[in-house]
Amino acid sequence: MNLPIYTRAILILIISFAYFYVTPIGYSKTFKIATLAPDNSYWLEKLREGTRKIELQTNGRVKFKFYPGGVMGEDKSIYRKIRVGQLHGAIVTNGSLARTFPDIQLYSLLMKFSDLNEVDYIRKKMDKKLIEGLSKSSVIPMGFAEMVLPTLCLNTK
Image 1 (cartoon, rainbow, N blue to C red):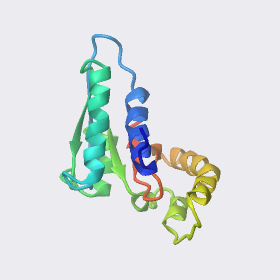
Image 2 (cartoon, one colour):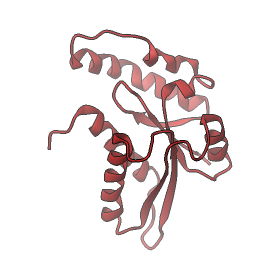
Image 3 (cartoon, rainbow, N blue to C red):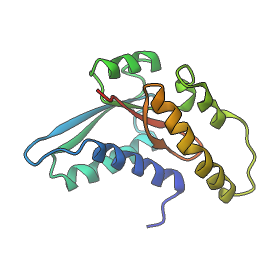
Image 4 (cartoon, rainbow, N blue to C red):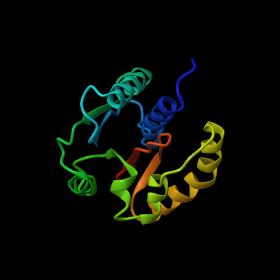
């Protein structure tokens, strides 16, 4: 199946999230994820598509509930809800992470690339450094989705 790079990145984020919290047999878990992405948007449809596959593969032991369109509030209140355990994670843009880790703004700069090979080259060099920096600033990123870079963040407690 030949999916666009950003679609594959979203599915990798979802699968990484599910496997980050491996559940024993007989135990089930519903992950509550907030996002500012509107309901029925392309992003949310792809997220739901990926999570349906995870639910099937885990016989319904791992489920996801999305809170789209900012119903859980803006970024600041979402992060607070993650810290207190009301949410398990969020899909956010890199700009919202700039308060805790300003270097993430690197991917917000206007960059010109000749082709996707140049994008991949930069991402190979920078993603790991940015993920490490975010991790040190109390955000556990599960990865970035192409150059739009929404990030799935987890509560580590």
